[in-house]
Length: 220
Image (cartoon, rainbow, N blue to C red; front, side):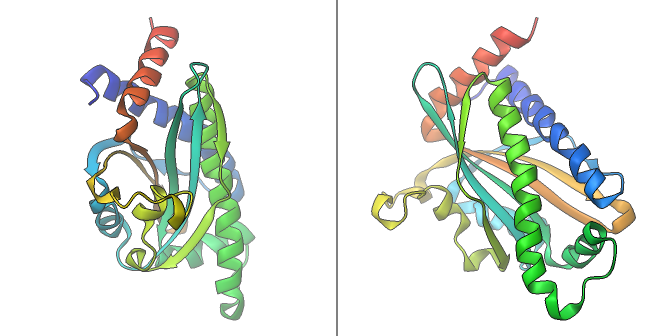
């Protein structure tokens, strides 16, 4: 479990990491982007889908990317990064990105391709900055796109089963997760969403060690 100093440090790390991605996204949509202060919760893995539903409802668009932070002490810290929006934010988001209304007939395909690319850019920028601040290397998976009810794609199980069914230990419900979240909004475009990073607290000592390393080397 993280103490108060460590919780403050990881929230600041997340804030700095997303801050590197925001200017690029702002330039892409030609509008100012607002984002909240980071939130950190220690969450049972079994409640992650419910948490997403509480943010975006039963109709969502999201991009999910698994990653590993690789440290010099030869231990990896596995995580999952998500960029998600309510489904009703996608049309104004696409219009903002393209500068013109996207025809209804092509919205579904354009949404998949565009949101995957945008999510990849935001998440990779965020995760790579986090990795640099923690003095680690990063290995990221190809982002996956989902549109619809979060319950139709078991996001939590996918996060803790990166190797597919053959690598699944069947005990993901018992895991506890460090759930970091920052909400983002483009008020001018009437777009709102969230960026989340999850760390499996099964690797809690590794997360604590990484944060303690950051505190020792980057703060006075």
